[in-house]
Length: 51
Image 1 (tube, helix red, strand yellow):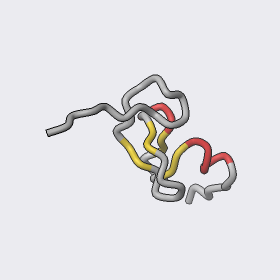
Image 2 (cartoon, helix red, strand yellow):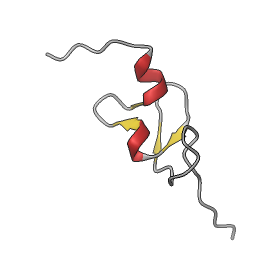
Image 3 (cartoon, helix red, strand yellow):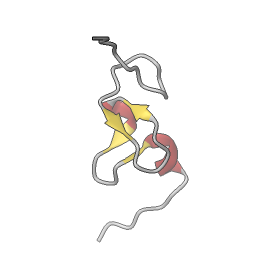
Image 4 (cartoon, helix red, strand yellow):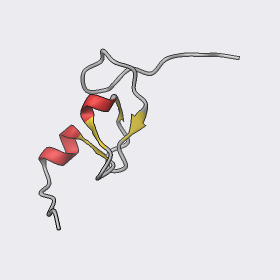
C-alpha cells in the first residue's frame, strides 16, 4: 500500500483536501471556495451572482 500526501497545486505548501470541479486541481482550503466548488484560479475568471 502506498500512502502519500497531495499538496495544493496552487501554493504547493498545504495539504490538498479539495478538488476543483472545473479544472480538476487538487487544492488546499485556502484556495477552494466550498460554495461554488471551484479553486481560486477558476473563480477569478468567473463572476458569481449572490442571490
